[in-house]
Length: 137
Ligand SMILES: [Zn+2]
Image 1: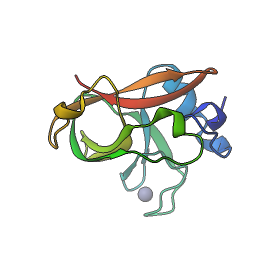
Image 2 (image 1 turned 45 degrees about the vertical axis):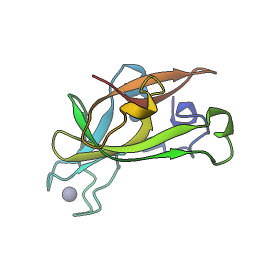
Image 3 (image 1 turned 30 degrees about the vertical axis):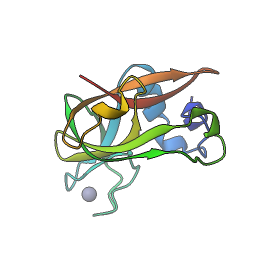
Image 4 (image 1 turned 90 degrees about the vertical axis):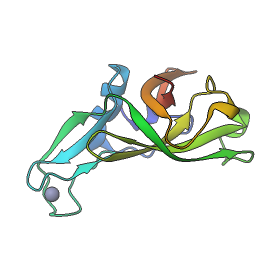
């Protein structure tokens, strides 16, 4: 199972990162952390861009994060048109991990505020695909 299962539009195959999608199906949102210098990455990377080590270990992003910034889109790239309008956001989680993703449509536009609490959850998409989104705790 690989990135072809992730999101609405297929990702290029990134075989070394396939566990990201497997873990998503298990309900875990995962980043990777360099075991040499400790830098954490999300989305996960197979190699550390800091020290070039390939000694990376998975970790789960959990708990409650804070909304850092967001933007509601009225136009979307090819493949996303049917979802409009939707809100993309960056939220910061424990360990200063910044995650880019979509806000759940269960959050009303007037509720969206920088600094609000968010949790991150896997969401099933049609066609046995999977992604994640930010939801209210
Ligand atoms: Zn490193």
